[in-house]
Image 1 (tube, rainbow, N blue to C red):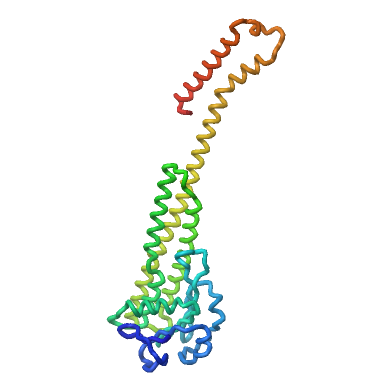
Image 2 (cartoon, helix red, strand yellow):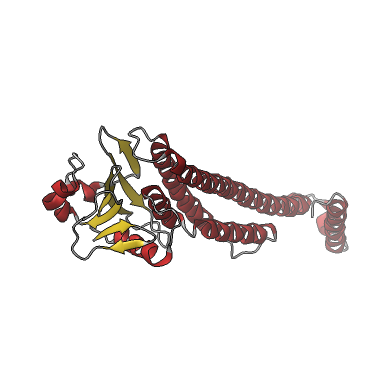
Length: 306
């Protein structure tokens, strides 16, 4: 698909650029790029086979072009493989080399929703990357509220708390953090404008983009730190539970130690133990055992060990 950047994106039915002074947007497959790259006259070589091997989001300023790649995490399931595609641009326009359909979907969305007072390539790039991170602030807010709920559940010692969910959120946020860092590097390459492809007065779009990505980057860092705090809180409560269990076991052991001594003492069955012949020996030892248990319980309660 070929578009020209006017008040809105306008599709060209012939997919042939008539006015070369109008900035354009092209979305083609890897095979189409291989057959039609001379049409765009960018003087670069991109191997379409490399599109399937993209692992990062980046941009590189070349002698007469800027080339780069996008690797976009799946916000619905971060365990899925990233969506990837490549691009190349110069002062005349930008070409997306994409076999996934993502670049075409975003471009179509921009065509249907955006209308510009000052049409330019810089504004299109801003809107395109903005669509990649659109909704991420709401996603971060949902993560924060979910973590707050988990923290509250841990504090109130609810049994339904699973630390696995905290680890999942931390992994998702880590992936987003890496993605934002790469987008920030890309925006900085555009802002530097090494090739003078962009008008100086339009570089403000890239600065706005940089500011927005930095805010998301800061938010992702804060959420990552929050997950660590919750993990520490969870571990602390586990330690407290274990300490309480050990305290109870110690108290029970301490209470029954005197009784064990009495049983062991009178279980020796020596021939000349006079208590064995007394009529009241058993009742007396029973009373003594009850008194020992009662005294221990009273002492432990006063010291708040029970």
